[in-house]
Length: 287
Image 1: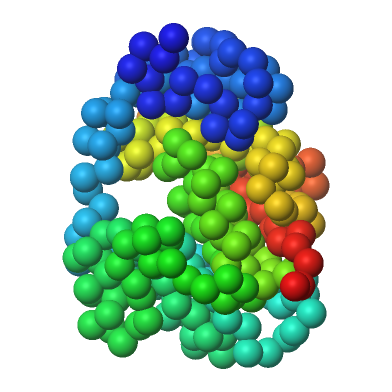
Image 2: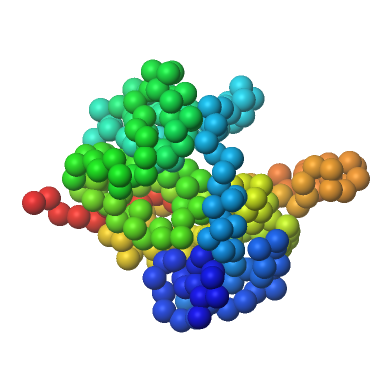
C-alpha cells in the first residue's frame, strides 16, 4: 500500500519493498531500497508540491560573485571531462536541464560551447532570456527536442527532485547523439558526511532545498543508468563536512573543518565525498 506516499517504490525500478530506516526527518522516516541502496522521502504529493514553490523567481539560482568562482572551477572540470569522453572536441552542443536563469549556460558559452537550457520556472527563464541566453520554458519532454540533438546534457541538482528519474533519463537518452555524454550532479547518500550527520545531512531537508525527495549513491546511479540506456564512465565525489556553521562552538567548528579538509583527498579516492558528479555515455547505435 502506498498510503499516499509520493514514492511508494524504488524510483530506479528495483523490485522489493522499501524498508524504513532510522533516519527521521520532518516528512517521516526515510526509506531504503534493499537492492540498490536508494534512500527516498516519505513525503506526500502535497508536501512535495509545497516545497517546490520557491524556485520560480527572477533571481533563480544565479550565484553570488564569490560562489560563482567556486562553482565555475567545478564546471570547468566537468566540461574538460565531457570533452575527453566525446569523440569531438569542438562545437559541442550542450543542454543544461533545470538551468534556472542560466548561469551554467552562460559560462559554457564563454568557453566556446554551443549551450542552451530548459527549465519550468517562468520568471527564472524570462530573466535568463533577458540576459541573452537560449533558454526554453517547460519540462524537458514538453520542449520535444529532435532525436540525437545534443552532444552533452547536464543535470545539476535535478535528479534528487524526481519521483520518476527513469522517465527523464530515457528522454535524455533519446535526444543525445550516440555516445553522447550525460553529467549528473547530486548529493552522495553513501558519503562520510551523510553517515556522520545522519538525518541532519542538509541534502535531506526537503523544505530548505525545495523538493529533495530521492537520494543517490554511485551504486544506485549505476543501476539507474543501466536501465535507461547509459553506461557510467566516471564518478567523482568531493567534500567532507562534520558540522554546519553555528551548530557548535566556533573553535570546535574550526578544528572539525580543518580535519574535514584533510579527509577530502581520501574521500575522493574512495567515492565518499558528499558532492557527487557522475558521467554517463549514451549506449545507442546510429540508424
